[in-house]
Length: 297
Figure 1 (cartoon, one colour):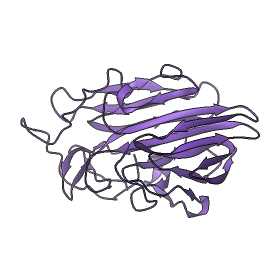
Figure 2 (cartoon, rainbow, N blue to C red):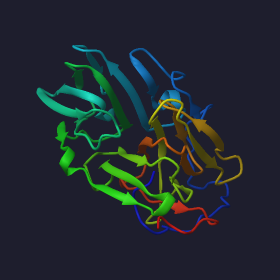
Figure 3 (cartoon, rainbow, N blue to C red):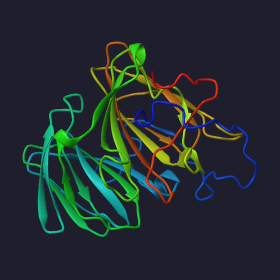
Figure 4 (tube, helix red, strand yellow):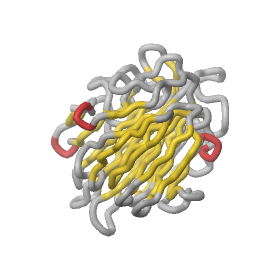
């Protein structure tokens, strides 16, 4: 992910003895790269739940609705944000109907969104049809259902030169109130590097680094568009991946240095980042790779 501090939040600490703050729950996901269609389930083109991912908190579902169709779901023990990727919809939850104007596609700009609390029944309906992301996280508190306005989404330009990208902090920590969920969108111009320098958030180090599971979901402009995603180990036996990713793919980041995300020239790259973790504070704090300390400049 590309939002957050503009300077390193601490050294890497590449050596971690037994008993360190790395996850000790479910094992690492069997597959880190999920090509489009490979994680489809029921009505969802993509369904990543904690149990299916092999971790504890972060979730993402991609839903396509035809004209006049609707979809109901139970939020269970998780909080969710309904985020239009293309098209408009209404979200009925806790007796209220939240109307989302949406957008033509993810490259058209920011969108409004709806927050669905844990322990709720929700229905998504779309008159003209569309595609919608459900970004979720297991949580403890039940916050009120509410509407997120597009004009209130903080948007920033991160980096410079061929590292320039746009970050839409619609559910970043401090931008929109959630219990555990952190989510942002990033748009990277074709030919640029994003999610760079490599960074990690796989330890709980108060004030320096957060422990967060992360999902990347990608969309790419134009036919035959592609991008590359790198994850490198932050400890012996850690997560490692170098993948060519396409439109509709997802990548799981249970631990490790992640970045860069590299956009093919002529094909702008979008990715949605979904994160959550066990920390008492909902915060995104990272460490940069010790060999890449140039920051986000």
